Image 1 (cartoon, one colour):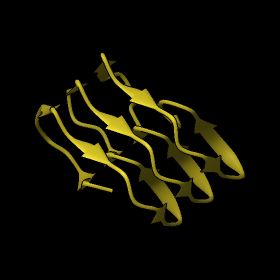
Image 2 (image 1 turned 120 degrees about the horizontal axis):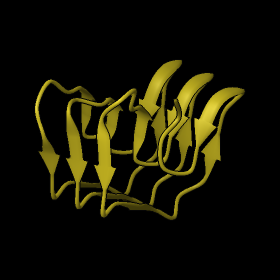
Image 3 (image 1 turned 60 degrees about the vertical axis):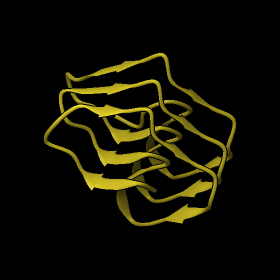
Image 4 (image 1 turned 60 degrees about the horizontal axis):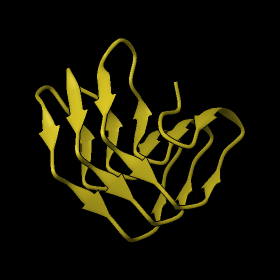
Length: 84
């Protein structure tokens, strides 16, 4: 929604629009860097795999003080906050 692939901290970002992709799809960040802090998503997020309301793929990174109220539509590895 805001950032496709992050290599640094993402802070104080939000998305309210629809996001549609194939893999690594997030309302705010598709593939998370070390941290995502104080972010939110209210839009619909649609993808096939690794789909999340805030972060599509978080791996071992930190997602803190974030929230999602948007709809998530996915087939595999998905979550309200982070997809996988």
